[in-house]
Image 1 (cartoon, rainbow, N blue to C red):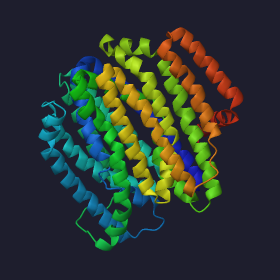
Image 2 (cartoon, rainbow, N blue to C red):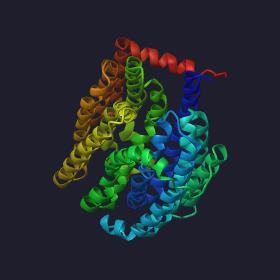
Image 3 (cartoon, one colour):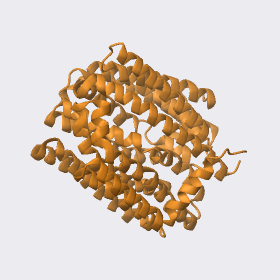
Length: 466
């Protein structure tokens, strides 16, 4: 099977996974948030903030090394598998021991047992990630999508069942554990590897040389999830933390294909590393894909958010609807430049990635915390919008390794998506919907690329044969 066929088939399954994820996650969030309320939902969500902060760089970047390397020996893979096992055990133990400190830092003693519980999930996720990276390396995105889709079903059915049984904020925590264990079992069956202690320096050194720089940059990026437990909660309280976490979660759930593109990008773009002209064309088209699959969906939800969020989640969540447009706009802008990070990884310009995330962190924390002190919960959106300025770092360093990227296609889509997002802040839903229709009509009239992408997506929906 050629690369194009693998990418299309894998992309289709990953897109189906995202659609399934969105539906299940939205239903799960709706029920849990409504039943728990902002305070209890905030307790569960800041526990998960801590978990994902560690998980997103727990493999020390060796997963990306496995995916990007053109040739890698069986002994090297065995040694890296052993490293994943050791990292899982060590990080799970440290995370559990740090639970009281994290509870103190976020002024929420209730999260201590919750953090200790999710530390077990951290071990399972690391073990599963090795098998998943083996599949990513072979562009077996279809299998990965199927596994993750099934695990989402396990997570949400478990969480919903437990919340109805009165498990309160324990429900999503136990759901995460069930999902992590399921992911390990399913991924390991598809891509098994020896679980042993085979740590050889000659194989670990090049992987860690690359990986530590990636994970260092990723750690800076992950600091954004700590803004809520370490910034919002001490300043505004646990209720505000729940509202902001819900707003961010809704933004992520509605951004169907961002994770698909990010997940596939390194494995796909690495195949074009030696052909920079083609790589620039693929990147330009990929940016437009990101913008078109994310911007209009977020803008449409923003149009009716002041109706939908109170109706679905309850009146106590209304503030989330007013925060949503600004958070969504920042999300759209940042997502367009995801492929720049992939390109810098591809050419091992990892210091530039770290500099970008450092700029993002400093802009987000300084302006958000100052804004919250001055304007309460509304100050949070100041930090979100100012953080987008960090993309200028990506632009500067990406152009040093790759020229010829066309930004006009993605820029037009972002602009026409931003118009109804901004309008939703000042106008009622019906007139804002009129603005949305006009903006999207103008987009497809003036943007040939947008029309082409829609046609490609519709064609790819047809059955693919080997």
